[in-house]
Length: 243
Image: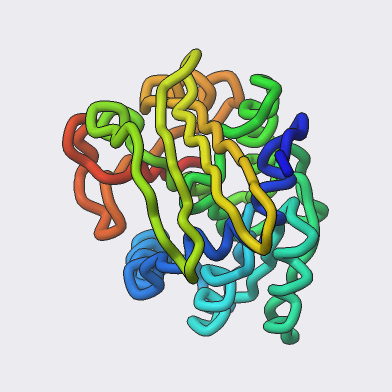
């Protein structure tokens, strides 16, 4: 069985195998990032946050536990269905295409864990930044947490196997036409599966050009979840604050 769709992320992110492969994500590190980020931005008490491309809601749930009113939005119906079990009066989840503005404005819009740059249409990258800008209130901040393409490409592991829950995920990585590509193949439940992840290898300079086109002002750039200075050669992440 080969998953081959026009929008690869619509099928892969909706697949239970996606969540199996990445189940070992560091929640403690993610929570410290949210602590550092909300403190740095000085988001008002009970402020409104949009977690854009929220997945199953791990960041949203933690932000809500800090006292913020949080909306989690994602294209994956399965992820939103799962996340809805955590809903309360100040935490809601909704299926939403992040290329389009949301129906309200927020004190902050977070786009986390490289949830950007995988669109088939180049203009959708610009549309997403415009939508985030439209989703901010007068004092609001946008945040995009992206991979550091320079370091990823320079340290690319061509091929490896990762075994999770008895499934051997064969992963092959390459750089093709400006995209960082990961081909994932595995067998489970008597069937063979193939998926592909494609993320545009955006650099800080690429984002700066997009921000300028979108009429967005880049305020700060950090290189990790502790909000240390960004270094294009050594930083783990590319975290951009804008409005």
